[in-house]
Image 1 (cartoon, rainbow, N blue to C red):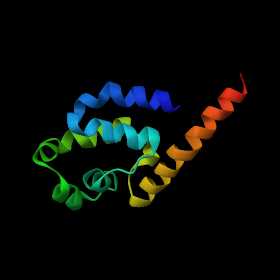
Image 2: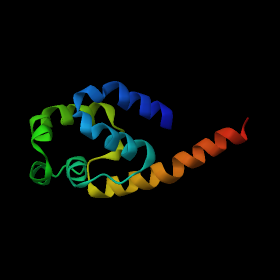
Image 3: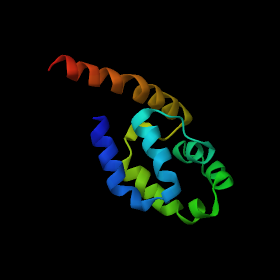
Image 4: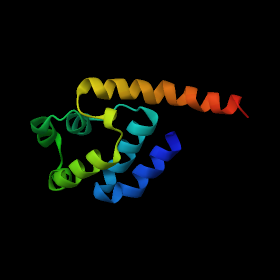
Length: 105
């Protein structure tokens, strides 16, 4: 699951600014809490996102929306609570899924 997510995100990263790609991948795949701009954006805090965005991210807001809507897991965005829950899931449950898969070998 984790590697599938990583590959899917990497294959569509051209939609978002290059300097933001690692942050998105680490958030979705590893549960690394995102920074201020990305947290606001993923939480649907439009005013916060614009307030924290650099000029490149402001110019790419439409692409961000397309990327998030189409390529990020549905429960990884939408509210601050979803972000917290996703970080916990990615940090813990992905690890357990991998360990369970290895036990079956």
